[in-house]
Image 1 (cartoon, rainbow, N blue to C red):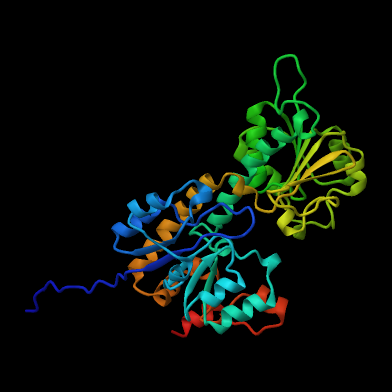
Image 2: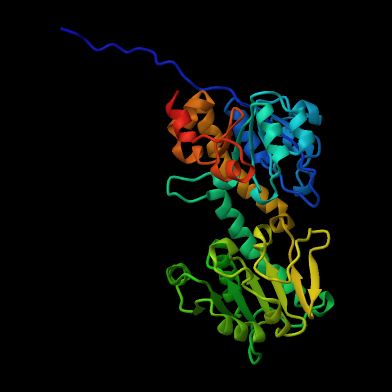
Length: 388
């Protein structure tokens, strides 16, 4: 009779060669992988090369990375790695330093894309994965979600700072104390950033109003917060009345999903209190406010009609260490899973959620938005993987 026999199963695990370059974009202090994550990767047998001073902005020293097992190297050496992890998309200069058929992870920032950038990546047959398009098993975008969570919390810190007299604000405290009317906060949007902004504002004792075009989203927001609060569909007159008494406005809504070109018009801003603050978290997507101007952390504000507009495009870089740790925590499991699969192709074939993040595969555009934007032929990544 046939008998069972124990046979050795070949391990498909693969040693990954990972490069972490420094970020040279203005006011960018975040780093994609922290020393704690590097330590885990090295213990799993992977090679990590970190550019000198890559973690300086987040207060991570080269010594800390070295003690975690990373190799500290010059910029050109880092770009010889098989896999690159960045925060910002690679610049044209950085693409020139890449080798062919490299794998690159970064945020895409699709509103700042150029045709030259796409052509340079394609010429190197790069496989590029956008952080913001990666999904988890629940269909959520974890790297967008964590950034929104941080941005929502930070927005209240910013509003509090700029409401102070020394920052040009009304000279009031963001919150409420006994015997004093609480500050009024208007939140436009109902995404994760809006939710965590509302949590922070309510915890401080502020009076909060939330506006959004979706009743379902407003119901979900109230359910997540666990309390009843003022909510309203965006009617121009109702919003105008709320803004007229608001001390701070947190705008998180993506205008692509709304029927208005500018949710907050210039006329609405003109009726706001002198010294009130608008924190426009949607500035990367065009902004919610007609009077907003995209700024940097070096000069994040502009004052129009007596209202302080905070419009920095990379707001989470105000807290680069926290943000770096949050991003790194999410990336760690993805990297370990990639190493266990043995090859990129197998990994993408078996992980449909990760495939969603691929916008270029071996030089072929796989993202319909990019293809249509620049009139470049593109292919569906799911069909490409099915061919292997």
